[in-house]
Image 1 (tube, rainbow, N blue to C red):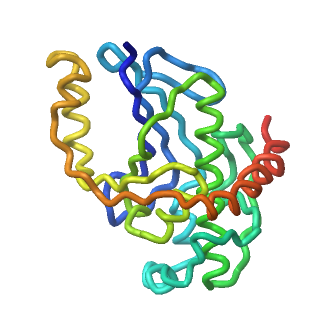
Image 2: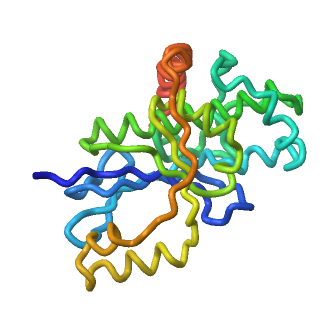
Length: 233
């Protein structure tokens, strides 16, 4: 019987940071090295990953941290803005499309809730696209999307992500990078992934998708891919 596989979407390790990329990782039964994916062996399994240059650090180019905290309550998490922005902090994208010199979308200059929501939606659409690419490449994605890093502190964004992804999103409380690295390094000598499964992880808050919000966002998830896939090399 095949062991259920679990996907992890990784933001920067330290909660106070907003990273320059969106990293995807999934424990999988075999290596996959296609469509922008790469693999590393992990005991009897593989760690299949990818990374987008569209990171949450784009938010800091347009907003102060205090502004983002103040605007969080103004986000309409269940109602899309209808904007389709591909936010890149600098030129070039590598996943889910490959466009080495493409600068991404022009971001509106307004420091308001509308622009804030457009950026968060864009990052979430990219994430949804990334999972779609992974599944088309043969990756099995099961269970909640586990997330860490500075972006996970914005509860409104986490709820928006759940609606856009149509998957539950769980904030991982234990985010020490050193602990994760040590467990992975020890896995080969201590029973492969068995030791990871036996290691207690403090559960975090889970955000669940709502059917009506998923239905509202679904057309924009599709339109986003249609609009920006033409920039891929």
